[in-house]
Structures are given as C-alpha cells and as structure tokens.
Image 1 (cartoon, one colour):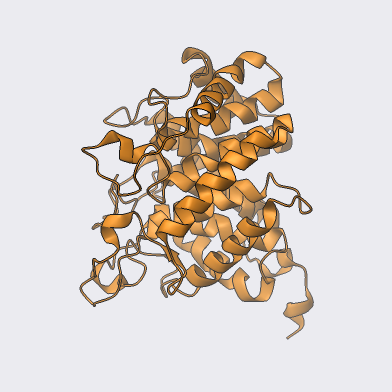
Image 2: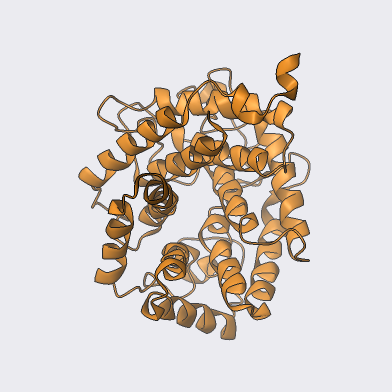
Length: 360
C-alpha cells in the first residue's frame, strides 16, 4: 500500500533513458524510411500527425542532449513548402500541418513561418461554410466543416494556438462554434464515444454493438490534449474541453484490452483481435498527459498508461519500425505486424514524451 503515496516516477518501472532510446529508434527509422505514397505529401494530414510527435521529440532532444537534428528536419520541410498549409481551403486535414508551423514560429520568431497559416484561418473564418454534416466523399462541401471525428485532431488545435499566440478572440469563438457543432452531431452520450461520421450511426459490429473506431476516438483525445496544453486553467473556454477530455479518457481506459492495446473496434475487439498501435499511441498520449497534469487520478489511470506503453514498445522491431498500425481508413480494419504508418509514429512520439516526464 505504501506505493500509493510515492510520486508517479516511483511507480514507473522504466527509466527516462529507456523511454528516450525507444523514441530515438522509432523517430530515426521513420526519417530514414520515408513514405511518399498516396496521401503522403509533405503537407498531408498523415505527415502532419508525424510532425506533431516529432516536434515534441525535437524539443526534448534539444533540451536534454543539445541535439537540434529534429528541429532542422522539421524546418527544412516547412521551408521547402513556403510554410503553406495544404491545398483545400476548408478541409481540416489540410491545416493540421499548421499546428507545427505555429510551434516553429514560436521557437524561431520568423514571421514567414506564420503568415500563410493566419491567411488560411482568416479566409475560412470570413467565409464560413454552411456545408452539410452528412459526410459524402462525392460531395466536397460535406467535408468543409468538421463532419468526421478525425477532424477534431486536425483543425481545432490550430485555432486554439492562434488564439493563444495573438490574443484575438475571433479564433477561439470560431473554434468553439465549430467544435461544439461536431460534438453535438457525432458524440454518443450513451456510450460516451465519438462516431467516426454519420454513416456509422446505425451500423453494428458482429457482436451487435455500435461501431466506434479505436483510432477515431484516439484522434479526438489527441486533439483535446493538444488544446488543453494551450488553454490556461482559468480561461473560460477551457471547461467544456476539459470535461469532455476526462469523460472520454474515463470511457476508453475501461476499454483497454488485457494485452495493453486498444483495438481497431472499441466495442468489438474480438472481431479485430490484432494490436493497433495508432489508436493505442494516441490514447496513451492522452492518458499520460492527463496524469501528468493532475486531470486524471494517478492511481486509477497510471496502470493503463504503463501497460499501454509496454504494448507500444512491444510493437517496435529491433531496427525501430513500429508495426501494427492500421492503414488509412475510416473504420475498424484488420491489422498485421508488418503494417506501419507515419501517423502511428507521431502518436508513439507524443505518448513517449509524456512517458518521459513520469519515468525515473
């Protein structure tokens, strides 16, 4: 019983050196083995998620080891793309990369890193979409608002960062309005989980349960963790997101499988028994952040964090390749150890940086 009174670090069996070694191995493998296929341009959402993990890792390695390698890698990507977001004006996926450009601006104070992002946000806010929430990939206007849960990772943190950076309330007002519209439409208040989009409202898994995608809910939690790191405790805009974060963390923590992973389907893991490291990475990131910040009870959630991190590291090959990452998709799919993806690595690094804070 004494361990309940010890600091968090004393309950974690792995060391900072071990966590950092795993992150370096995974980060270096990904940089050495770039994915240049479909939806893998520099500015695509897939890489934006990677960069978000990579920038946390860059900050850690510069601080701890005086190693600016990863900052240089990120800066080179921004520079060769003129610091522009991706092409589609409204699409949440296409501004995800702006989150990293804002962070780089904060570090280097180079206005050219920030201007294209501000221009995109200004245009969207002054030309707000009235598109339907009934997502249909044949109708681009149905992807102009945040009509699928992944979008809550891609766009809201950008507006939150612009609000904190500039102090201009128009960014947070726009974000609040659009986020709550998505929440009202996609959040199931009985299950306390997000549908991926409206097409899944009436679908059922093989066991008769509703379809709630592991990575989809991981996307939401990851986005909330990013937003809460921006909004001060006393900011009046914070309460809704903090409550949602705690509610969603409580729900997903109870759905962790005995093997430490969260699977592709949250309510029917038996139909998708393979590990799934992108969902697991984002969820471990959120839970670890919540414990570190005192938002989640340490005694309740730390075991899930530790078990989840062990599961993630078990999926890393000796060369640093992270396996068991579900490919691009919108719902549960079969996964194998050979499958990897850049956004899975981003989630791994986000989680690892939070684990580093609590390790010995």
